[in-house]
Image 1: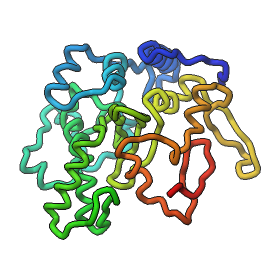
Image 2: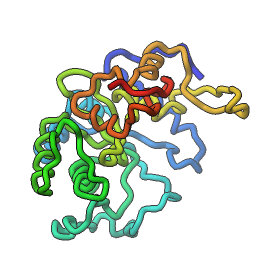
Image 3: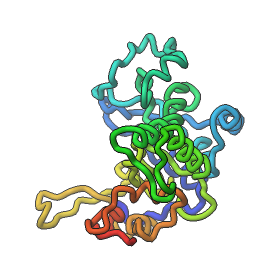
Length: 291
């Protein structure tokens, strides 16, 4: 536990601090641990420029993340199962045709990705994640869920028109950039927060309020930022983030009702009911949402 740490204010310095601290921790863990000796694999500016030409424009924060961290040289734990996974020797030969891709909803490649997506070697995962948003939302809109945002106006009868309205909204909204699993960093929307979100169509939730918050919580153990807490509900104790660090305390107490999140806030609150308490923040009590 370290509640006296001061996080570097500058984003570049902060990311280098994450890099150095995590690598030092991983170098000391048991050889039996999956992350023993793990190293970050940063990209060059030229590589990032080429990725932008090929895929998508990165925001300032995501570009810095890719340039200093990007991914680590480890894959997911071998104990985790991947449906229809290819043998290791076939991974480099793996390729799916466009026709095969179109036949499958919510396409997922048949090999394990790195802990964070590798934008150089895991092109199938990158392409599947970039398609994930459109796929998952259109599936909810056209499927049994029949999902629809109020801001889109009256729901048209035509499936084609429903998809057209969604995609018009989606292309105006800040883009979501894949980081790991179904976790995305929201690009700069011109104002407000740039949260990290878990996206499963309309079932989208906040993972962290920004990239700094995400990395702090993701690597809380490596950074020495956890503490045991005890109360009547958990007499045996539970682990949570340490309290008393101003930046972390401020992030943990942001309230969703008060958060400025362009476009995507309506999705984040889609399942909120005015008469039911709902999630408002990490250290914020559940409460009825503002109307």
